[in-house]
Length: 350
Image (cartoon, rainbow, N blue to C red; front, side):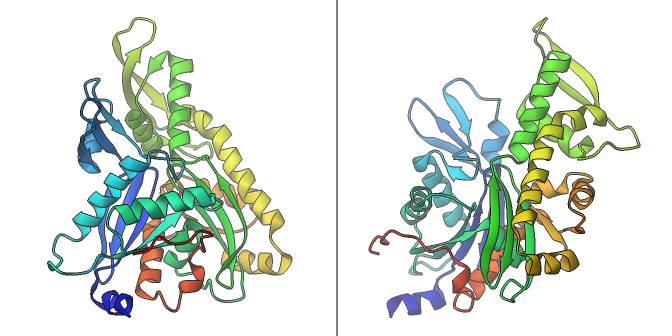
C-alpha cells in the first residue's frame, strides 16, 4: 500500500548505466544528466575525488596516487563499491530539488543482453545501496527499441543494433520479448583501442584513448571514403621518447577499425540467420535500427545494408535512445511491466 502511495510522489528515475557514458531520466522531467562513467579516486585515502565530467578531465593527467577509473567494463560492473558511489552521485544530483520528506526513488537500469544472475544482482545491490527504493532492470536493446518508438508489443519483427562503449547488442523483438539476440564485447572502446594499436605499430607513436576517440569521430568510417580526410594526432614517439605530431588519414583509421567492424557485421548477419522467416519479412519492410554512440560511425548503416540486404535507419539522437526508452517504461510502468527483466533471486527487504 505504502509503495503505491510513494509511487505517486517519488521522483522515479531511469538510468542508462553505460561503459562510456551514463544518462539519467527523471519521471516528468526528461533527461537531466548525461555524463561520462568515470570516477577519480585517491588511492592513498580511498576517497572519491570526482565523478562524471570532472573525473573525465583528469584521465591521463593525474599523479600516481590519483586514478581516474571506469567502474564498468564491457557493460558490467567491475568495481562494485565505485559503481555504488557513482550511482549515489547520479541519484542525488537528479534529486537536488526534491522535498525533504519525499520517498526514495524507484529506479530502472538498462543492462546488456545475456548478463549473468550474479551481474544482475550486482547492479540491483549497487542501486539499492546508493538510495533506490526499488530496482527494475531492462535489457538495453528492448529499451532502445522503445526509445526508437518501434511497435514492440505487436506481433511483428523489430531489429535493433545498439553499439555502445563496451558492448554491441543485436536483437530481434516481437510481442514485448526478445526472440533472438547477440551480445558482443566489441564496441566504441574496442574501436578506440584498435586506433591506439594501429598508430603504435605503424607510426611508433603512443597516443591516449581521448586522442584515438577524437580521430575516430572526426575521420573514422566503416567503408573507405572517396574523399581524403586528415587529422593531426599528438603523442610520444616510442623510439626517441619525445613528443611528436603526425597527420593521419581516414584510410589509416578505416584500416585500424576494419577487423572489429567485421565482427559486428558478422553478429548482425548471424542474428538475421536465426530470425524466424515471418519476422524477417517484417524486418525487411521496417528496416534495422541503429542506436548508441557507435551507430554514428560514418557509412556503418551503408555497410550493414550492403551485407544484409536490409535497409538500415539510424535512430534519432542515437546516444539517448536507450535512456529515453527506459524513461517511457518508467512513465508507463504498469502497461509495460512485461518488458522488464525477471531476476531469479529474492529481493532484499525494503
